[in-house]
Amino acid sequence: MDFKPKETNAFIHSGVVSEIHGRSIIVSLDKDVHCESCSAKGACGVSDSTTKEVEIIDSQESFALNEPVKVILKKDLGQKAVFWAYIFPFLLMLLTLVTASLFFAEWIAGLLALLILIPYYTAVYAFKNYFRKTFRISILRI
Image (cartoon, rainbow, N blue to C red; front, side, top):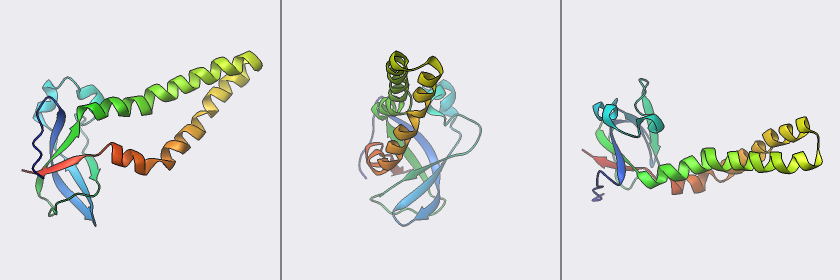
């Protein structure tokens, strides 16, 4: 892969190939020294002390176990992920709560607002292949 991302367009983390399953590659991310100065470390989750693993699906290149690599995620995908994981479910709950409170008692409206998340997350799970294609993670050899 000849794609060389600019620092301003992507988050880049070092890692090591830990597992290979066909065209799927599991990369264990290193605890990066650059995470301390990163402005997105609170949202990223990679700066935690535990080892993080990411799965790269349909990699175009072949890699060996324990090979050092760089994992790249475009920054604009982070905003889409926040929308689908936090903002949209919140707005869905709020809309359900307001609408249901017009017709039902307060406790029923609150219960319906919580229960609306079941079909939402079921739909997200049903479209997991779409989200895997949308939130594509790239990998580069070091």
